[in-house]
Length: 468
Image 1 (cartoon, rainbow, N blue to C red):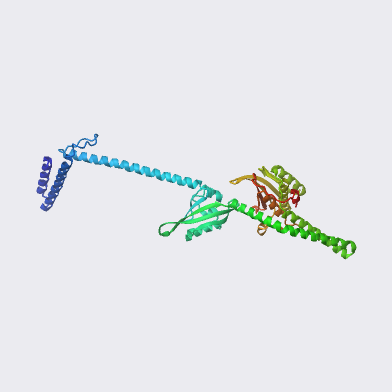
Image 2 (cartoon, rainbow, N blue to C red):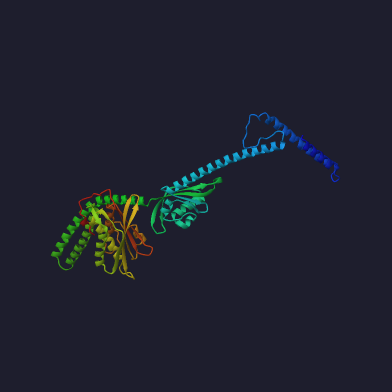
């Protein structure tokens, strides 16, 4: 043991032994503890000298650190502590580098996940257990026609009574999964859409529902195409079935009309009057059969470039002269398209006339508006033609049957006008829809493709033969 240590130890022992304030037992215990600590330090120093002394010649160490001397315990301990601290600093740097790499990987994974979610074609909604939308990608906002969906309650956004809300509520409350469901959804603008929905619960610990994952697909365009195919198939089947029957029926009416004319010529009084009534009814029925034959026959499109702007202006001028008490206006974008100008004129003429007749007699004057718009769709650009009126609108029960042949709400109508309109539009690869406006009145929307790849062939019927 070095001399300073011995002197310190002797002084402490004498101080404790001569202290009148401490009992002798306490002083002895303290001296024993100090001796134990110093002995342990001396033993540790001895072992370190033996261990490090043999390697002193082989290890160069860090040239920036001072060389420890085994003859100076204080310097040796300081150098050892400095080496340990430097080692810890190096390990700290390694840990910081590992942490930085892990953080970069996590950020890269997060950016990739956000990019995939943002660019995926299907809509994605994450709903919390409390009904809060925690995440929504642009496709979901487009499908629902709602912006800034995040951190809003789904029931407030899409409506508490909507079928989609009911599915989400069932998933959150019961943990049920819904796959490939089709629901109707009404946008905030009143547009009816068909959505494909898949909803799965998000389970936490103990299989507890902590949220829901909802995938959305806008099937509106696909549903419209399916309806067009169904309408074409129905029209084709109806034409084949009814054309022959209508011809035979028309021949029978001609026979009845001939006999009625003969009876009228050869009779007088009440018999002649009754024969005239028969003639009047057979003429009316013959007109209905003739119109039905026009509807049942396949259309032969004489395709040419049709300037819709000038066509709409001519239709409005004709209806305005026939029904001057109704104000008819037009606006928006109209482009030229390939089609049969005669058939398209007939369809627009019928729709505009129906709208003007519905607007007659309104308290503040009847109004009809023909508006055009170009809509860019994945399958190609569409020409939308909207014909609205401020009339009484259409009864809910009539909307679903309004294009059915022979269904009419007019006292003197044949019920074939709108059916022929639908046939003309469908043969041009388009569609026609009807809905009531929130402020009153009805709206017919004709959608026509601006570029057609197919041509619908039919029988040898001129477009002028489709007159209503």
